Image (tube, rainbow, N blue to C red):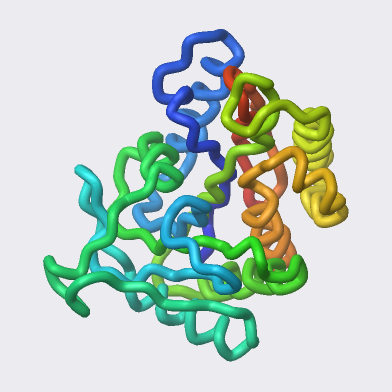
Amino acid sequence: MLDFLTMMPHGDEVLDPKDDVTKELSELMKKIGESSNGIKEFIVVSPHNIRIMDHNSIIFAEHISNGRDLLNDKILAMKIYERTKAENVPVVGVNFGALEGEGSKIPLDWGTSIPLEFFKVVEKIVLISPAREISRGKLVIFGKIIAEIADNYMNRIGIIISADQAHAHDKNGPYGFSEFAKIYDNYVINAFKNNRVDEILNIGDDVIENAKPDSFWQNLILIGILDVKKFVVEEIKYACPTYFGMLASKFRKV
């Protein structure tokens, strides 16, 4: 059953916040982790694991680790993979080394590990990375598939949408400065505040290209999830301590 949903940033600033606004963001992330109510299995949608041109990736390695060793729920991963293939949404299953056992292992990326720092008990995960080259509509469908499979699964499942916002807030940052960064982040903030996440679907390509977010594609998946399972935004926090924006959203199931 799909019992929990959140969006969380993955900038390491949230692990050791230096300013009051980022501290508030980090406190909300702690609150989100505590509100997971004993859920021990999570689907994590991260932009920073295996990235494949034109295809979403679903990890099938038995172990996902980088200091913290997590087991992959390969049964749930396969259900999502098979349904996605059947719906003609581009997807690839990814493994490394052996088919199973200790030799079947993929690194835990920072888009996954940082949000998971706020959850005390995590026994299994399914790790998914979206492809930016896939159409908006196909990514929404992918989100619907993920939600439907999770909601009909035997275990209680939480979904973590891992995403940072625009990366062009600072001229001295690696992506430079663009006025579109603030435009993009304000649009996303208002969409979450108003419980109209679906409006993010309307952001123009020119804004995305110049703002340089890594959240847009995960947001399309989130829109699909919310089409299937009713959650409402209960609280959000936003901070931009460096060159990129970070937003956390606490959802409530209704």
